[in-house]
Length: 264
Image (tube, rainbow, N blue to C red; front, top):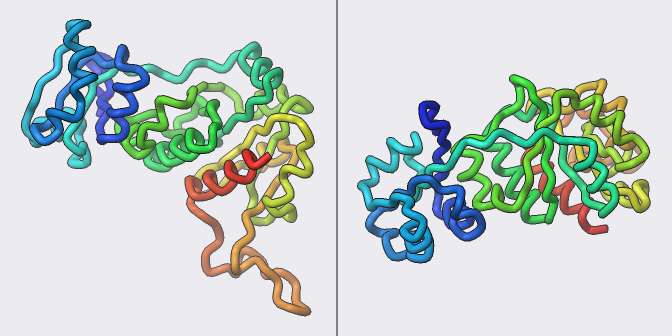
């Protein structure tokens, strides 16, 4: 939940607030906790006291008002709302130089999905996530932090005005991997194709996937094989339109793809 008047964002959820307090306590402007959590954030409270940042024990109903959710898990920290950092050519050049891969989202509109993707990226060591400046793309919200389970503290979020321009600029420099249920390349072969280049994994909108123009600017389109995509003996693989379940949720797909990419 945002406090537009103070340009604040509420971070709630035990794991999310614990990671925030451990990695970036200096970002906290106010901290609230329930009685049952009073002894679980002692180090953070001492830090806040030393820096004259207010913290208070409050009722669960007050925590719900602060974050706009019943899923606060007994803790809410208010931080400055920080928009994604504009991605510059020098930042991307550094990724290429040191071999860091990145994740590019093409209009992923659900804040919970975004949080789950952030969690997977942090788990697999993908530190760089790029969001387009687009009304269809979810922004970083309270639920994003909560679902990320602390992962937000271990990734860098960047913004770009044009996904296509970025893909074109990185041609030949990063291996651009898109996803498509009609692709012929199984995910397991992706590392054989990319050689020594860092990967730029592109994940698409929950309903339409990545757009056709984005597909046209990828080096490789991969598919995650399903039980329905495997051909029976003597028969061709069935058309995706006939599959009972056509694809995974974008956050589930992200976890599988990032696992495969980081195996290298």
